[in-house]
Image (tube, rainbow, N blue to C red; front, side, top):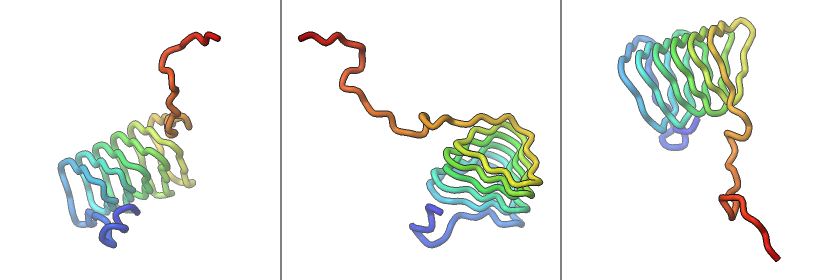
Length: 131
């Protein structure tokens, strides 16, 4: 997890916690409680077995064991464990689904080209070569 390099821990919403609002961060998160709102991070998000998200999630990678109702945008890998339950719209780089996972969502995958840096051409417009 990205945040472990900074302080040895990651941000966490505990099992007995209900949170309503938006989170924007560069830290990694683990959600074992309930979140109603939006979470946007450049790190990794783990939604534990008892975790619930009603809203949207945008992150680099995600491991899901709990429930999500809303939209997900995961830049690299979305890993759905057997206890996960997903409903909504999903955009991913790669999708891994364990047997038993519930996935009732519209899903689109980003192409390899979208994830790579495109080389810049010296000429931005077509041009004619002359001798």
